[in-house]
Image 1 (cartoon, helix red, strand yellow):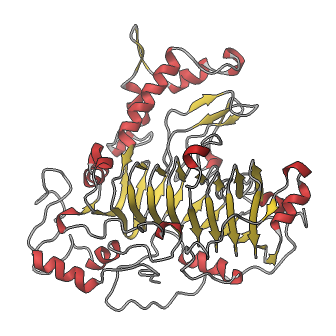
Image 2 (cartoon, one colour):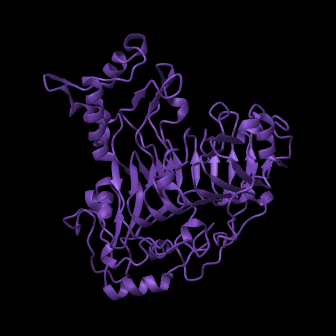
Image 3 (cartoon, helix red, strand yellow):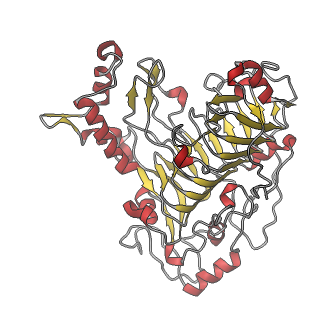
Length: 511
């Protein structure tokens, strides 16, 4: 099916073809004709084709977020790289090409509109496989010696043996090995973290555009669009052991697949997020805790504001989506962190779907599916954090029998929640009442919110009836669904994958 131009403002395919024809240019593939920056050069082409790519992909990349389509449409709106000149449009097929197209190490200091079209799979590093020809975890570690007077290369295995609580105790790690771990992490960061500038659109072309092992970091900029991409496995080779994180300690990883930090006006649309070859079930247990090599899939933190996340998939991951980064940041984050989540699928995700601090956050027309296989990972969906105001409407949950409906909500210092028209296993269910029935009196939440998305002008798009949400999301969410823009957009939706399940009593009944 075709999801292009759902509600977006668009520069049509005919205009794109006219621009290409007037410049007489196309993006060259392969080594021949490639410029010194390694990204590609323009070469004359009578057909006006982008590197053999349908010009409709460029038309799609010039789409902007439609009026009223969530918080990302507020303020000055989100247009990304829609105004990019032909010389600032890039087709990339390798990590080095992608980094160069975004502006390299100085990307966050640039504000010239640009479009980056991602073709095929791009890997940021080789994990533990030297056959890829990319640097591996061992390569990063080999660049770091334990100390000035100790030439041994850093070893994560030695780190684990040294700081085992049975040997070290429960104090935080200190000393040469901890310092070497931090240096090894810095080496990896230089390889896998890439900043993004202002007025940028990153779009996957086709149904197989994927970036693996990278941390895309949108910090200190504004006006960014990311669409039709599979972002996978932001793997930390050197996670940190923190014995003071909970009563049992935790391993904490450094990278999100995509992070939005001190940034305004962002649209994330039709993006699939997951842990790739390292899902939670594959992680070993070290010091009695999962050896966590991932942080969030998409986190929106540190004074960020005006973000829309739509038609995306978050799959098989624990700490999935964080909005707001600390309880003590009221002076910085108060009045910000306004985010809309609509028509997204959380599939066997563990928690933070999302967890919110401070922000006025709209969560509507989303589908959360927990299978029997994911029941052990699931903790909660909506985290009601400090001074948050979540408006949750027309969302759908399918839960296995051993997951209680009351666990959909978890309080993290918040005081209120608006939750209406929620389906749990096909039955309309009052999840707030279920939470309050199971909570101590001093931890209960008031019904309502301090804001209304219609009054705020950020509900201009279609809102589906709750009975339609499951099928709409399963058909239309995720990477690979969007198609090139044609001059006659008009799409006939493909049929839904399955019929909805028969209604059942929500797990745990009223509590």
